[in-house]
Image (cartoon, rainbow, N blue to C red):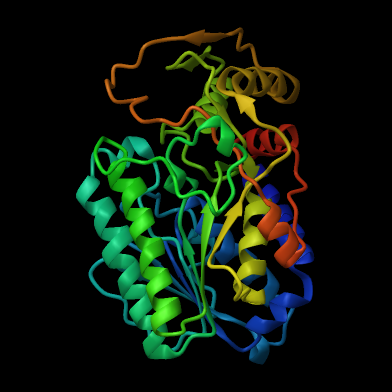
Length: 357
């Protein structure tokens, strides 16, 4: 077994243990996952597959895994291609979603990398708006038990310091113009659609606002900071930062995020629509993050990477409208489903680096 497979297997076991008996809601049920081949949603497929192995065949959850493979590698879930309880669909949810039997839905189909969605703004809008509406219409038609819509912390835009950490009641400081607007605004519209279906049609639905989730399986070429830094360490090259390094973020390891989202799906909290999901342990500057990846890399793989250097990006819009700070207030989710993040940033970086060896 490769390091990559071993670490994902360990993560899945950890997630199953954390979610615990709540998973029993999925026995003999069907789960639709859109964007199933992507970094975050592929974890849901792996988790359910591993959990299924502990059950009698008659009790297993059937997974409908949808992706159009526009921004992810087709090899991510190839190890599951022959599983009896998983069916894969090469489908664009912005065009249509037609599944005969579905009880729960995780809708994660989206172009999430800024370097990609700025090239494909219309496709990004389509996935987040038309795709979300198609999923919600299917949910009504099939009378599903619950839906979670993967939104984003980008709905908050660039909060002022008085709204850091940011709670779900903050309405955002965003613009409908600019190179990032196609993603930020379409995620906001997706949440509005969820609100309409919840209030008008009484659909059980929650929206999830992830804060900078990272971990094994993330595309090292998608131009986000954690994979950029790890790629440099793996290549024994200097870590390049295309900013002044002073912006801050709070990073969440993938197993923490997946366990939170599954608990929200299965516990179906009705008192709130939106939930932040992230790690409130530490808010760290881009420079501090790069230094930490450098330190962990030297320890884990004896990397010869020497330093962090600052450069100007050839992409003139690389930093346009990028928020200065991003950190979650997790009070709502902690009090609603009794969940908290437990994987430290350093440990998450270590596991992620090891997964690529």
